[in-house]
Image 1 (cartoon, helix red, strand yellow):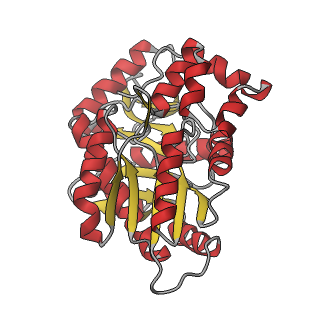
Image 2: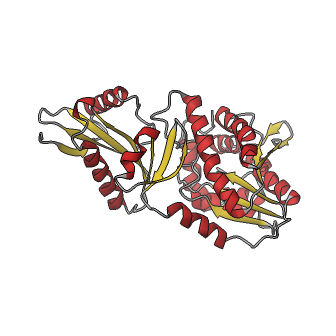
Image 3: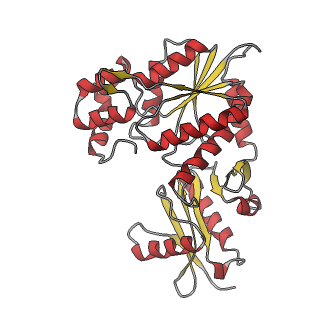
Length: 351
């Protein structure tokens, strides 16, 4: 067997990334836009013959050159990336892979969470990870009666607006219990700790709403892996279908019968996502309830619009679109780093 070396690919290594892109393309993949670490395996001539990457606590963009398959290079890449994750303090690791490679990752002690046939498999390195997550949700939830109506909402709330509040209030009015999942990925302009605080403050008057961190099993469309999808619509579809598979198991555990979503006139991604949910949720015995978008005057309320107003310093308009608790936070000294971050970001609205 030839001698191989593995190491981190530096951000300024343009030649290295061109070689990685070429390798990924040859394997029917493309470089994911969400990566924070990439490694490469080099042969004796210094050519890149295998690669893999990380994003947060997930592994992505794993590939070995056709000429070097069967030499154990994927094991080398995965072992290197797992070591990197452990060094970061991430013992719980996830990956997304094609259906035909899931068996290989099972041999490396990854376990299937769920799959979309002929598209994608979602895996983790903890045998009972998802089962433990469901058990924790049950422990944090009230005991319900057989005839009670139970609903759920999943939101990013970046930040929490009057539109979000109305959505939760409507669900709380129409159901005995509402499980509110706050996307806990810390990839938004407003950090998770702040988003969670503002959601909890904004729904504190609703006694039948239970707030949950989404954890690692419900991820946002912004960070869903796209590196083995044919096009953007395929990415959105896979994200929605995988979300529904995960959510259906959560719903079964908690007895959820309805999922509430807000109407989406701005974001094409969220609009397509909602369309797929409306079609597929009933197949799992779950009703999809779409609540019309709220407005104040001529301004339709959305978190994107709030971020845009923060960016331009129009806090009078922000005040019209958010609860008092959200507005008070953004008027405080604690919000100044977040306001600066939003104002320094070129694109703050969804597409």
